[in-house]
Length: 306
Image 1: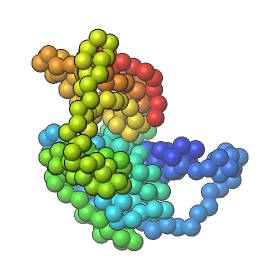
Image 2 (image 1 turned 180 degrees about the horizontal axis):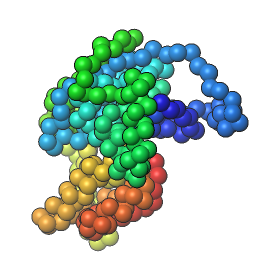
Image 3 (image 1 turned 180 degrees about the vertical axis):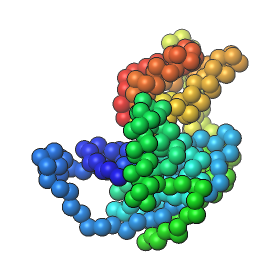
Image 4 (image 1 turned 30 degrees about the vertical axis):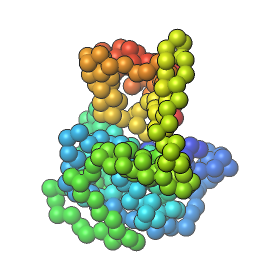
């Protein structure tokens, strides 16, 4: 339906809206601005089928870490990834944009979501007129480019195939060093201890057994602080992926609110910061009354950006 190139690697975020886009170099961008066409060898296209629905408590972050791990393992460097299946219709536009934004992390040129009713709802939500949205839908339907889940789905032909049941996605984190080293929350403690033992590498620190429980005490502005292996010393709510997703940001703010209600607070020696993807995030945090809880926990606004 439309295409765009940009000089930021995360231009791929637009693929969540059904617009084909990816990052390019400065020379290519200048040529495009001067009206020259983009040319490329047609890459392989990986079909990623989504079924089911995310369970309560599972976030877009959990989903994107799972998808990233699967695609890195499959090998999608230089390829297009197209998401499809009835599970796609259960994902919000923000969640799709989160997955599309991470294309550079899983190595694909783009992670594309075709236009469906969710896309149209987002266009209406962001101020497009009913007339414009109706025209877009009619155009895409006429060109067989609109996904309607009430109609029989044509079996697509791809270079290779992947499938994920959204019901099976679990709360998780990544690390300790790479974003595609996904670890479920229930395995986090055992994985960390294994990393302490493992030889130095992406999943290892080679800390001798006798030093793994070592505690270092120091004075911090008159308070006695303790640090050990695995202590949190930096807590930053910042990225162009997570911090542009309302469900994730509001979820984090509600956690901060609950912490305040329970009398919990971040240790003073933990460096905290909040850098949302845009000023819109600040507006809805202020309007909802949740920004104050971030502030109480030390997550003050430091700026906007990626």
